[in-house]
Each structure stands twice: as C-alpha cells, then as structure tokens.
Image (cartoon, rainbow, N blue to C red; front, side, top):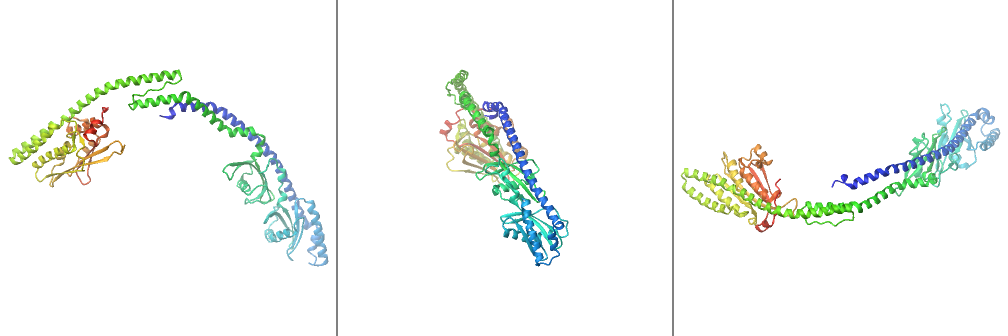
Length: 599
C-alpha cells in the first residue's frame, strides 16, 4: 500500500500543519527572548571590556610618552652619557635613576618594571615591584631583539610581547642615545581583569591571546576554551559571537564571545560567557526550546494511538481480509467492530465473500469443462500435419523404387501410428515421446542415408516424467525442413533432457528442461527475432502452426510455469529450449486444478 496515499499519512500531515503555527510561535518567542538576553549581556560586558581596554591602552600610551621624555628631561640619564663608567658620580647618578624609577612605578599602576640599559658596557639597571631575578632575566634575553628592531628605524609606539615560560609580559624599549636604552615591562596578568565581567559563571572568564592564538595571561578558562576562542578571533569585529564547544560526552556547550583587539600590541582581549549562566533567568524559555520536539512527538503519538484504536486497526483488518480474498481465500469472515459505520462495512464484506464463494464454485466447474475441451482440440491439430508429411516421404521413396526402405519406413510408420493411437491422452511419459521421436528420425534417416543422424542425451530416471503428447516432434520436424539445406556434411540433431530447481521458488517444483539443437544453418536473423518476440503465437494458421500448437498447449496446461526460448548456437545451428514442471502422472493429476487465465 502507498503510505503517502494512506489515511495514516494524511492524519499525520494534517495534525502537523495544525500544530506547526503554535510551535513556530513558541520557538520564535524563545529565540527572540534569547537574542534580547544576548544583546543585553553582550552590551553590558562589552562596555566593561571597552573601559578596561581603554584604561590599559591609556596607561601604555602615557608610559610611551614617559619613556620618550627620559632622554630629554631626566638630567641623571643625560649625565650618564658623559660620566666615566664605574666612577663615583656615575654610581650616584644610577642610584638617583633607580629611586626615580621606583617612585614612577607606583604612579603608573600597570607598570611592573622600568629599566635602563647601557649597550656599551652591557650594564642593566632594573627597578621592579616583583621578582627581580625573573624580570632581570627576561629583559636581558629580550634586549638584543629590541635593539635590533630599533636600529635604523623610526621608533614605533607598539609594545612587544615577551614570553617568559609561565610568565608573559609586554615590553617597550626606546633609544635614548647611541649608548643607552630605556624601557618598561608590563605583566600580562595586570592587563586582564576577569572580575569586571558579569555572567561569567564557573566556566567563563577573560583571557588575553596573541596573534598565534596562544594565551598570554592567566585565565579561569581551560586550554580547550582558549583554543576555541582563538579559532574565532577573526570575528571580533562583530558585537558578539555565539560559539559552541563539544564536550567529552558528545554534547555541545555554547558561549557568548566578546573581544577587542589591542591598538598597542599584537594581542586581543577576549571574554567567554557560558550561555547556561546567561540564561539562568530564563528557565521557562530554555525548557520550552528543549521540550518542543518532545511535546510535538507526544501529541502526535497520542493522536495516532487514539486513531489507531478507533479507525486504523479496523481498517487494517478489513484490508487484510480483502487481500486474502484477492488471493482466493473466500472463507474469510471478519469480526464486527464497535463503530456502527464500520460494522455496516464489515457485514457487507462478509456477505459479499460468501456470495462470491458460491458463485466461484459454479464458474470453476464450467471453466474446467471448457479448458478440457480446448486442450483436446489443440492436441488433435498436430496429427494430420505429420500424417501428410509422412505420406509425402513414402511417396518419394516409392517413386525411387527403394522397396526395402519403403518396408523399413512402413514398419517405423506403423509403430509411429501405434503411438498416435495413444496421443489422445492428456499426457504421456517422456520415454514414450522420445521413442516416438526415434521412429520419426529413423524414417528420415531412411530418406537421407549417411546424411542424417540424431543423438538422445537424457539424464537417467527422467523417463517417468510426463508432458503433453507431440511436444518435441514439431521442432525436430522443423529442424529437418529448415536446417537440412545445401549440406555437404552429416546433419545431426541432438535432443537433451535435464532436471533442475526453479529459480523463483525452489520449494515449489522442479523444472524439466528439454533442448532440441542441430548443426544446420540456424535461424535467419529476422525469423529468430520474430520467434524470440513470440510472433509465432499471433498466426495460428500460418507456417508456424506446429510451434503455435505446442506453446498454446503448454500455456493451457501449465500457464506461466512453462515456456519456449529460441537461439542460434555459437558454433552454428539452431537451438530450441522447452521448460515445464517436472511431474509424474500422479503429480500431474493433482496440479493445476484451477483454470489458467489466458487474458
């Protein structure tokens, strides 16, 4: 049954169309509410982030101005260039510079360290509020790179990123003169202010990432979250982004991502806010979007169960009953359902099947009588056709005065006619049919001595299977008439019989396969195409009356379980293949009791 045309499908589509607007409205309201929350949360946190970044950038700019002014306004740094390295005045000047740097560190709250480097004497003066050894090591390692960047170029306001293992910093170096370089260090963690951001929850946080996506500051975010944020840095020009993280259990966790690139260095300020914490004030809408598919499924299932009990089950019972009737089971009777409408339909169905059952018995008996008469009429058509050919052969031999051959042929013909007395039977055994064919071929051999021969290749134990009389003889006769032309070598006819299982239903019956082949000229191509297309069945009164008679007798008796195939052999000669059910006389009497519908 076509499911698309069924009532079940139409009910599902109709109910879905009714519920769809409601679900779409609920879904739209939920999505709109979530968008409003995202917009408000992103606006609030973006304002905090922008203020924090602006504050950091302002301090870095002021530090730039401070460093650029050291070579012009600080007399101690200017005097160092003229004082002898290691002298008392040199040491006193360095001490005053150290004191000034320590004082200025307190003024520039983000600055971790100030330093002054003597490139000629490789002497580094460092004022820091943190770990002196760590900062000293970082500055010493970064100075060659910083000095190389300043050679022959105009000094730029950007700060460089220095990675110190577990501690990262921003460093700014300016050239005072040919000997001295001044600079400042900023701890990356001092630039990150995660406490300013709302709705960050337990799984959110802020982080500073470099251009390569690596984390530059400490963060409450784990490595997977930082890697996820780094993959979406290119979208920081948007007000916010909604990104997803696939957890270890295969589920997806969504975050609201905000970010601002720094104007003072190649780094980005990034904030990740978990949507679960953002939406905690909208539990109803969150549950609605999760339960929409479940609710739709529950409603559909409930409606389908109700309709199944009320309508679909009785209809299925009625349809199954109709299918059984279409297969010939006319004893089907259906139980009466509870619905009054279906009760009337079921009662009418039971009454109809009862009437059809009685009517079919009468029609069946009449068809049996008609089929038997038709079968006998077809079977009798074959005898006169062969008798005329046999008399022509005897006449030809007598004209040639071959009396011994006439005597032999008369003997074979007597046996042949003796077989014809039994040909009025419904079926004969295969060995009887082959004996009859042998007599016929012996007659032909007498007519064409040393030019005709035949071979019977039959599997053992096939002789007791039955077939309609004179099924093989017309094809042997046609082989001699049409294939035995203009030959210089012996003409050989081979008759083979085999038994095999049917491919469509091996448990139903075995197949008797009979082949008649020769080494003659074969079928002409146009005649072969007509035979293969079954055009012989369209001309029962023409030159193919023998073939027409055989195929119609097989169809009347076996229906679609029998058939003919025609072909030419690759080595030359024609081939005719007959297949029919392999049955004994007892099995044949029980099979095909119903008449065959011949259209």
